[in-house]
Length: 267
Image (tube, rainbow, N blue to C red; front, side, top):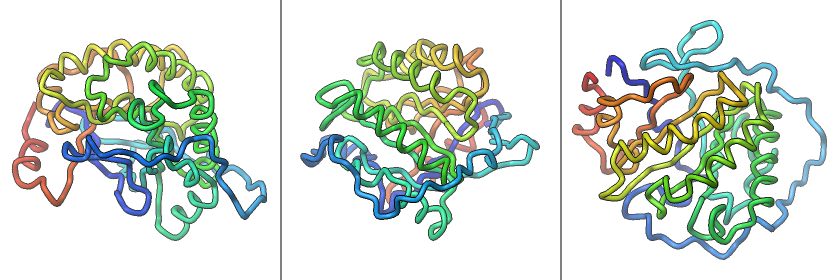
């Protein structure tokens, strides 16, 4: 796409996969664990942070670039939903992923609904504390970190738009100027009535909350149909959003030629 900036689904769904990532999985129930459990770490050393070595990232057309304008392709891992599996959010796990698995980015998948969701039955204070722990662990191990507002069963991002504005206002104030932090404002919008104009309107409401605190942070914006309708976004791009990309999720087991053709289609 000549004028559409996008980021493919680089997050590998292996040992630390997101809670559910496909239409058929949207009804899958989470287990009963809550964010209240205290992750146990065996290594109590206080490592030196490596975040200073990370380059600020910016989008230019369809490419992601570093501060030297060299192309960047990030590869890494998404956590399981931190609402139900907080024990994976710790420095030891992230360091293993960096040193043994070659990870460059960690995605902190925080469900907004579902089990112990931020906007439903979960403790917002505890989840925000867990997000902070994840950001610190990722940057201490020299990795980028995506703060993911993980909608799924609540397919319309506008359902909790007010909470999203408050959340991203809070976290962007806390991490303003940190080159490691990336904001994903809506994972996989879905539903027959959730068209691109719906998602675009939501993005236009939430992005200014981030930009008020951080003019240059990289922002990821989901597209309809579980991040598969990027062609809709390509016909009606966001304006004045600054440094941002549109997300596309590609699942190799089910997505074939049509999805690849859509990605190559000019806007």
